[in-house]
Length: 329
Image (cartoon, rainbow, N blue to C red; front, side, top):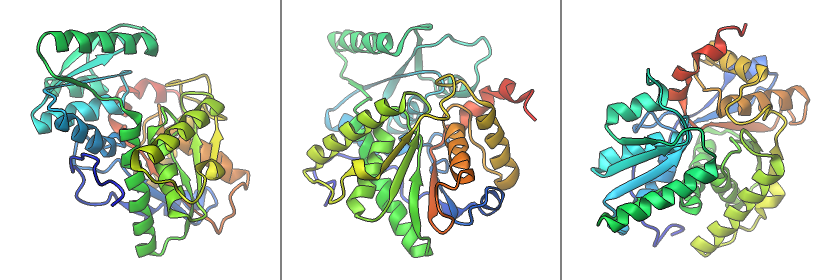
């Protein structure tokens, strides 16, 4: 078995939905457009990090951890999901944010409040400073007699999307969908690396597109491929297809940077809602959909080649982004 010897907590009993985007495909001129709904899961209002959490928490429980530590920016799917899974498993969780608390909590901050997890707000510090604080805090908790586990291992996180690639392939075959292109958010690396490694493992003619929402394209590519190599080491297996050969990176729709929306990204949020009744937030998925729309408009993908875009969740953040849509048509 591919994952034998890797501790795992089973959180997903059923595959997430895979279906055709009929009206959006018509509007964008591509009849074979599909979506993998990783925003539809039982836990924590769903999202890509639920798949990662299966392996993160398997590791934490194997180490007898009694305190879960996680850090991220305020829109972080990872923080929300880790906090919720901690609650489900009866583990204490402390969330560390590089951000300012709101006097009227909304989005993930509100959800953390409802779950009763401890939140530590560091103010507008860098991600590097946040990481340093996290390590120092973990050392402090360890010295006090706790058994903290920092949730951050990118290779364990990626294993969740290796499984997602295999799951998608089985679904596509059972439904008769001939999918050749996979589109997923390019961000920290583990999610897209797992999907890429899994696609390479299948040995099919997949192309994996990772539009960046956070870092320059060359940086995302280097990080993604480095994690792919680490997956091979962790599992003791190398795909027959080189992941680098099927990876397409782009930062054309990054705009001014992370969590700064573009006119195109705000427009596709409205389009997807109006045509398909599906909601996405403007930090992550909106820029991915905007990139795909432009790719199709440019004719870069033939109309007879099926495309599956992953909805990686994060919808709770949308409810804190209302001001972004006040002046958009």
